[in-house]
Structure formats: structure tokens, C-alpha cells
Amino acid sequence: MKRSLGLFVLLISVCGVLCQEGAGVAGVTTAATAASYSCDPATCQLPNCLCASKTPPNGFSPADTPQFVTLTFDDSIQTSLYQTARKMLDVTNPNGCPALGTWFVSMQYTDFSLVQQWYSAGNEVADHTFSHVGTPSAQEIASCRTALNTYGGIPNGKIQGFRAPFLNYTKDTLAELKKQNFLYDSSASAVSDDAYWPYTLDHGMANDCWTGICGAGQIQLPGLWEVPMYAVLDNGSIPQLMDVYIAGTPEDVSQWSTSSFDRHYNGGRQPFGIYVHPTHLTAYPGLPDPAPKLEGLISFVKSIAKRPDVWIVTNQQLLQWMKNPVKASELGKQDYMKCQQPVIVKEICNGLDDDNNHVIDDNLLNNCNFGTTTFKTCFNCPSTAPTLESPAPVSSSQNGTEGFRYPLPLDCDTKWWDPISNLCLCTSTECQYKDTAVPVNKNTTTSSISANGKDQEKSDASRSLPWVGAVAAVVMSTMLL
Ligand SMILES: [Zn+2]
Image (cartoon, rainbow, N blue to C red; front, side):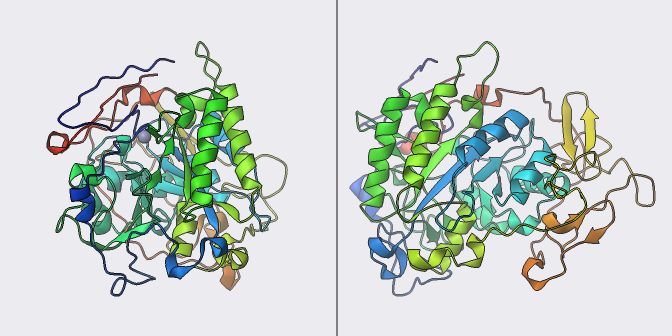
């Protein structure tokens, strides 16, 4: 695996790194731009407003504060990638519940039955645009959500997070997220001076200030959270953000990651993140075996999971805590940290192995096949391949005909929904759910997504930022696999 760095140093300097969908970080925070973020904690208060800060919310001491760790996965969900992600999460939290992760899903190559399985296991499904494009249009964001809802059965209101492909976002992207009622963005990078806890954008951005995005009056998006992505510093103190394991040997990566983790753990307990493209950790014929990198990563996850007060959570769980912080000793009792699964005596198509025969949704999945686009789903196949313009075309079977699947209604969560019997099997108040998100649907058709399996990141170059010309220094790089 070879890096090829193309450097465009415009004026001063520094940024460092490799950016393969933001592998590295443009880590220039000038005094002028950093100073332009201003937020008054006296007026910006939880649960809906929080200023960027490196110390825990509510004035908690670090010792009382949980050390959150987020594992995030980007791009399509396919069987082999899903298995890679599951291996990384094979640890438990202090309350005995499984560690959970967040998947930022793009639609090309995605198998929607696995989207549902990921969600039903307690993990988070988030939006990564329909076509995997940077500086995405409103339609890219909305169509992704529509497809995840229609074929993955994820309630619209549970799709709360967004990450821009190549981490390439603008203030318009953030404004669009607010407009479409997302809870958070997680596209911004944080190095050390700006390793803030998640914060709301009521008073603007405090990360990626080198781009000029933090200036007064740039952004004012009340209640929209930014969950910064925290970089790991390598031997040369160069910040590495995504797929850190690509930048060194497993031993190196483990050492960098451990010392960066310690800076959080022994410092302000800011969340620590591990951001991966599972495709790089999954074996493909003819490519170098990534197993040593994956093993290294798994043992790093295990080593930090053993430390006291370390919780591996989804971004949504993290934000639940942010809005209403409780001491580490109380965290395990919070509803959002519990892990009760439905007990349903017969197998229904809900992403779970209800009858405990070790096969999820056995014989219940529909196979939707459009040549280059194929996926499985518990719901109706569309009559044509979903596209950006028409992410949920008319279904191939109609209500009243054999094999019809009932879409997820607004008053049932996926795990409890039987799309064949048209029944919500939740009978207690604990599992009741009411989706209040406004679904966004688009109708029209044009070209279809194509799919044949792997290496969808081939075209991922660096984060190419539109405002780059105005910036002190940037290293743009490409690292192709
Ligand atoms: Zn991506």
C-alpha cells in the first residue's frame, strides 16, 4: 500500500498528512481564526445549547466523567464489511451491554438487510449521502435517508447523524442538516488545541477554523451538534484522522493510539474516536492481507475497553449523555445504555434471530436484483433500481397481492415490526415508539446506482475544500487503494 502525497503548500504551512477521505487533518488553527469563536456559557446551556469546551459538561471533574469511545464505520454495508465491524466491537461495556458503533452509510453496494441488522443489534445508522459525494446537495442527504428508511426500515427520526464524504462539508451543508432536522454532524476534525467535547452550533464552529468557517456570523444553527473527529498524533506529531492503521505498522499504530487515548483519558476526558473504512480491513483476493492491521486494532480496542469508566457508544448515545450528563457511576442505569432485546417467539423479518436458530431473518428476505444493483431487504423490492432522484421507486408488489410487505409505520420501531403480518409486536410502554420526523421523499427517475462489490473508495482523494484558496496552508494528498 503506497502513499502518494501531492503537496500544495499555499503560504505558511503545516497540516500534515494523508487524506483519504480525511485520513489526515489539516491542522492549522491560527490564533486569529480560533479567537473568532465566541460562546457565553451563561446563556448557552444544556440540554439544547453547549459551548465548545475541552472540559467535561456540567462542571464534572474528569474523574467523575465517563470516557466515551466512538467507533465509526463509513460507506456501504456489505456482508464482509459488516463482519469486520462486528469483530471490532466484540467487547462489552461496564454494564455488561455490548459495545456499539455508528455506520455512516452511502447507498452504492449497500445491502439493506444488513443496515437493518446493524440497527436492530442496537447500533446507529447515519447518513453519508446517496452517491458518496462531497459538498452534497440537499437531495443527496435526503435521498440517502429515504432509502435507509424504505429498504432498511430505519425510522426517519432515528437517522440523526451525518458525515460528509471526504469530510468535505461547507456551512451550507450544515445549514441543510438543520433544515432536514438532523441532530448532529460529524465531519469536523479536532487535533489537540481544538479537541473539544461535542457542542452545539448555536454560536458557530470551533473546529476546522483554518478554513475560515469559525468567523463571527458564519454559522448559527441552534441545537445542531457537532461531534468532532479526534485525531491521533503519529511519531512525527502529525495528526492522523481516519484509517490510522494505514499510516504505520500495527505496533506503531497501537502506540500512537494509546498515547492519544491517554491524553483524553488523563486530560479532559473528551471522547476518543476510531474512524474506519472497513473495506481497508477486509480481505480481497489479490490485495495484501489486512488481517494484521485488523488484529492490531482489535487488541487496541480490547486494551482500552478494560480501563475503568470506558464506554464504547454510538454518537446518539454520546449525545443523549451530553444533553443530560450523569456521573460515570450512573451511566449504566440510563435507559439509552440498556440492551434489552425483544423476545419474539417466531421469526419475523426484523433484523434479529428471533427463533434463535443462528440465522437472522431466515427465508424472509426479499432479493432485489437490477443487474448492477442488488440488495436484500425485509421490505418490498422497488420496481426499478433506486436512484438519487428516485430513492424509493414504486414497489414491485402492491398492497393486497401475494408477498406484499408493509412499510414501517410511524408508530413502531423496526425491531418490533412484522412487515409480512402488518403487525407491531411491541405491547409494553418500554418499546413504544412514535416517529415525529418528517419524511423527505423525492419522485422522478434517471440514472441508477451501479454496484458490483468493492473498493468504492477508489476515487477518494483528499478532502478538497472549496475554500482552500483562502487558507494559510493545506496539504492535499491522494492515497488510492
Ligand atoms: Zn465515505
